[in-house]
Length: 413
Image (tube, rainbow, N blue to C red; front, side, top):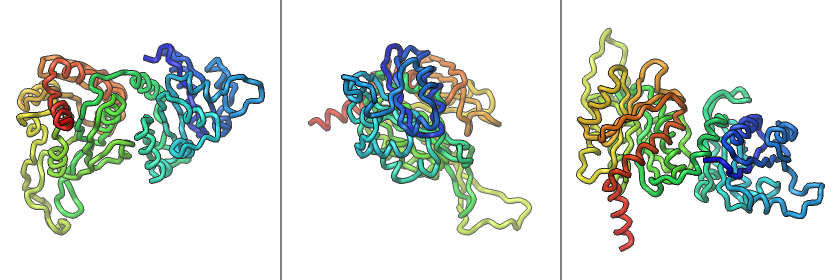
């Protein structure tokens, strides 16, 4: 997808600027034509010589170059590019782009170009979480910018949190996907993510180790592919996906109600959340004391959200996840058939498997008796493969799109 694509790589002043070297190499490996524009601050972290050696082209950084050039560079660059990737992009440059400030060559090109612009942020976690940064990102996404959100981990300052620039290989892979015109573009998908918590008393609850990473990855991929996304999330440590309207819930009942409130006119429902199967019969009003050697809890089943959605007379294309510790495919197929799903996605869980991991391996089974094995890789990349399979299945079941199409006709009337 990147062969012969003309890409401007913008680099801003951040310690993660060294990762841009790998991005240049990977883009060129896929056949892209790369031109680098670096800010003055970026060149404090990485040299022009390094970037020019890797890109095999002059690196531009000054709005007014010393040598005479008949072309107005920011205009010629703006017209030349098929895509602008800024990796890394700082909070400062994000703010400039939001408010139309063009005080260097990179921001001037961004203001002049009609090419898609992709931002790969890198910054301290506090700066990423700051309301100003998040508001700026929402505005940019609303204008058509794409944001490849940062990862969580230890940062250069020694602190831990969300703000690390994503892995260059994942960045380039996602960039390639951005050129894909998905047959699902314009469709509406409802995605659940994360765990639920069922209270026992004011301070204790029943839950599971689900991190929400797979559900959030699917939400981001859906936006990249042009779908309208409704994300319903249980409690997670992940920053809300920029630009995606998210409903936050805690309990299985709240997730059920949220799903049912947004399901109308949706084309696809993907149940990724690890919803608690049981809740306490009685939630104690005060903290339970350690007075007894043994404590008996009386539990009752929670509502089966996936089964209820699947049973609707006019339902969306319904996808479930099956997290299994044994007999994975057998149990997943049972879930597919008993709940009358259109597709089930199975994975093994247990110690160091799936839950709270950045990578996973999946098996996808469909009601049309197709089986897809997806080898272990980043969840952010698996998400695109899942939507690719979804597109194939939905193209063979056009009736599944009647909800949005009927809604559009009614709106037109």
